[in-house]
Length: 360
Length: 108
Image 1: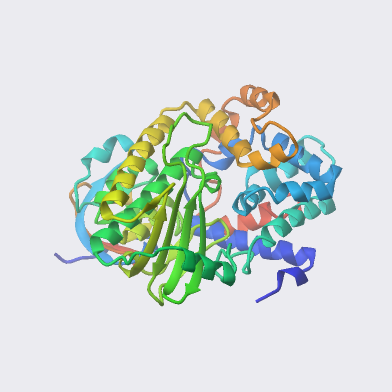
Image 2: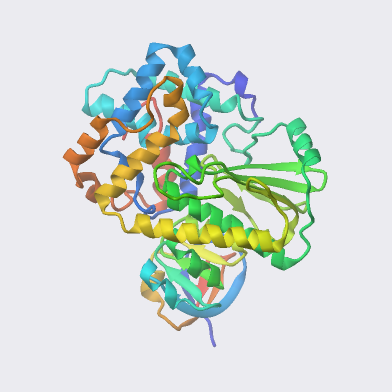
């Protein structure tokens, strides 16, 4: 174990890279839906990354305040998406943008610090936890919430089904690679009745699509029986060693109102299923260039609160669309297949996301 | 049936189940899936969810322990083996197989 505040900058980066290596190894080989990150981001990553970095360079204290407005999972994602480390390396290597190794390192540490101060331990999820709440906050949550018992298997399965549907809807809205814009999994927390795992979907109706989702927010807080092993990695993936459906003991599910009965849960699942199907078909029907443009919008939208802190519009600037138009499908074809076999993916990620080298 | 190991993949969701293979190569084929079939595909995405909900187990060519298929199958509590590289080529519709989500073995 370590104390974040006592780590040196290099130690923070090493822990970050360790977390990245673990999480990327878990993803295995394969294509992302509807596209891999570089297929979408290679046309504009440097533009976005430089626009963020310039703010860091201009006024670090203001930058820190802006970061603190952004959900930590989005900040983590920024580090391994185009708008972060990779975009800045691209700008340095291909666009002659001046950014030293030291500056990039400071930039990364500044983002890690913003994440760490809003986590209550296990900041890099290396212990398998994503601790958003302190033990006091967990106690308050337990006390103020009503926790119906999940007794029947049918109800437990319906709740698991709602989890699958909500998560798949998030992927359909934000693509696989930007799903952190629409969901947050935190915990596991030890509570008196068992193990608490929180799934939250704060934004299932972004202005990127015309979804008209009448239930844009969902919280699914579940207490499982003692001994259930749940891990969460740095990329906010949940991993269970054994199936946990039947281990559910208590639940609290809410949109703008609590959902308690099997009927209410089933109705929301059906509603989200329909939205997921429509949205996934909408995305599946897009042409590659449209997928790239929408991807750029989603990436910028993730940083909405950051840009708005500076009084700026969050939509991608004209320059991004011009670049996408100019590059066409050059990167779409180049990055269609993953470049690294499963066994090497974690090591590759560790190298490419290290701000202290020029490897991309 | 004398069962031999026909494939090895990455364990994604534990449990052992036996069933008939249904190869789904794209979202347009999702309707082929019947309850209790074993879904075999290259990789899943949100368009596959209706098929995944009917599946007794899931086997994919690609992916790791945190891919879409792995996360969904763990949530649904059904066995899943991912990253077999060639399940869609080696297996065929209607084949009876055993999916061992703990060892990552596909027996047939």
